[in-house]
Amino acid sequence: MPTTPATSGSARPAAVINAQIRGLVEGGGLGSDEYLQLLVEWEAAVRSEGLRGDVTKAA
Image (cartoon, rainbow, N blue to C red; front, side, top):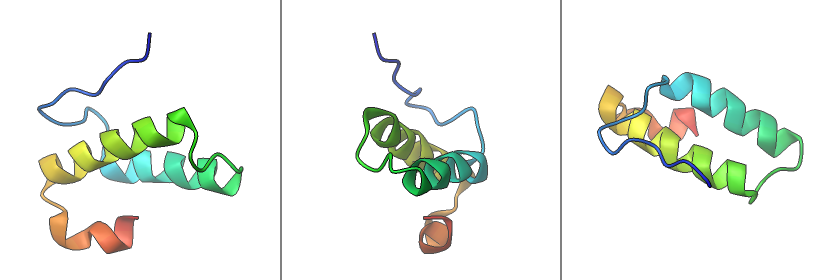
């Protein structure tokens, strides 16, 4: 059963999640279930870290 990130934010920093996303994209994992779950986790981390203005840089 897939896990869902906590609604109150991510336990990992957005930069760490972003690095994992980049690795998946470089490895051809774009669109995979893992990629989509990481996007949701990354969004939560960005919100909790107050990085809204830096979204373009992080993605």
